Image 1 (spheres, rainbow, N blue to C red):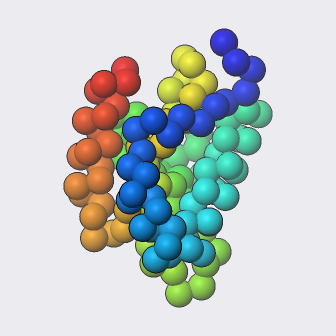
Image 2: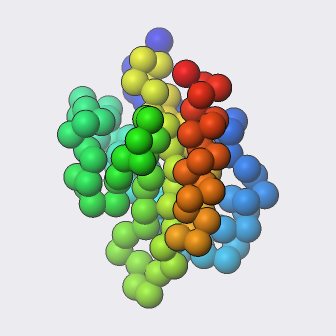
Length: 118
């Protein structure tokens, strides 16, 4: 087993990530910076249950799914990066990215993927 937390992109839609990055570059960068902050907290021993809303950009969507929002971006489009931190293997699975408008579909799709991972 690895020491630190790893990142797995196997379940992410490459085309969607490219489109979001092209159309919302600042927000995209912010989401991934926030992902790194969560990774650092987990590596320092923080528990997922302690992190819900702390930091404010990290929120549970249920069934092990978490969303990471952008932060510190003026006049930002609300983006959500959907992740599944698997504590046994210490892998953060990146499952999807979307906007407020696609939120419900994104959550449902991510939860379906989690069933295949667990």
